[in-house]
Amino acid sequence: DAKTTQPTSMDCAEGRAANLPCNHSTISGNEYVYWYRQIHSQGPQYIIHGLKNNETNEMASLIITEDRKSSTLILPHATLRDTAVYYCIVRVAVSSNQFYFGTGTSLTVIP
Amino acid sequence: DSGVTQTPKHLITATGQRVTLRCSPRSGDLSVYWYQQSLDQGLQFLIQYYNGEERAKGNILERFSAQQFPDLHSELNLSSLELGDSALYFCASSVDRRGSYNEQFFGPGTRLTVL
Image (tube, rainbow over all chains, first blue to last red; front, side):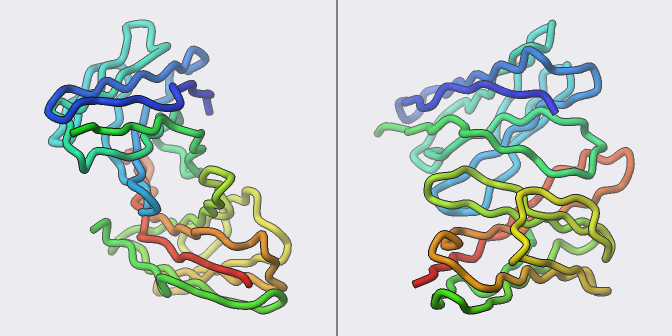
């Protein structure tokens, strides 16, 4: 699975959009981008995933660049409850193997 | 609520002891994964079971073992416990059918403290 690079930490004002970047320059054609988050000491929570098209669900939007070497997770209106560590993971979708969680980005939403 | 349950929530024991952590996957999920999260490390994959059989191994110590039962629940056995085994242990499950997205759903975790 391709390696990802994320900033260690970010701040975002409550009510504003939080944009979390992820670089995955070695991604291969059949690898998807997954995003999970972990709120303090809770189990990681699935957010969204995509292959090459932008995706949106009730939680977030995922923007993947045309060359697929980077992506951005967007939380449109961040709330205090969005404070968490966000993990960007790249893997083959139909793989039954484990997710490799890196260090992620610690997002702090500020009142 | 992910639908994955783990028991117990907290476990305090002494060095040298043995404990068993239990996980019930979401209804219909065939795969169970175990992860360890220590304070100084991220989430580390330990082992995966699929429909009762071991499918993948990660950084699992020889003192640790797991199994998945016919009803698909899984147990993680930790023996000869050391102080460094203190951590959060998460279980995750996924459908794991070909063609599906295979996102994993995580349980709330078991916090193990070894004194």
